[in-house]
Length: 92
Image 1 (cartoon, rainbow, N blue to C red):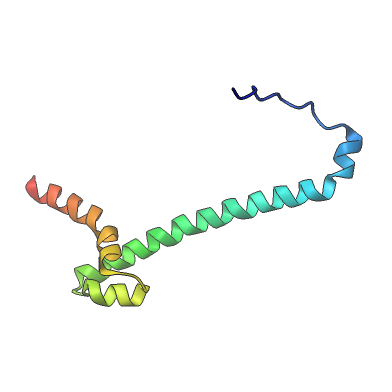
Image 2: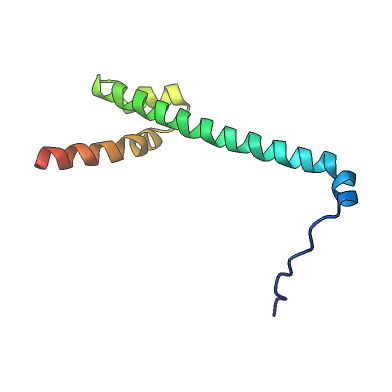
């Protein structure tokens, strides 16, 4: 049976000073990771909009897949949610 997690006491001022550099690295790394994640989300939205625009203008899945360096199936997975929404709107 696993032991319960015990919360460690806060660092003393001496321990904080001793570990200041590594704590700074941890903080900056975490900030950079959050910024990168936000950029990925934004890039994904931009790519999806561009793929949808291209499909609406007759660009084939094969051409898009080649441009993206991926498979046609991956391109379809990007487009599929949009197609479902469009079908639902057309049914109304």
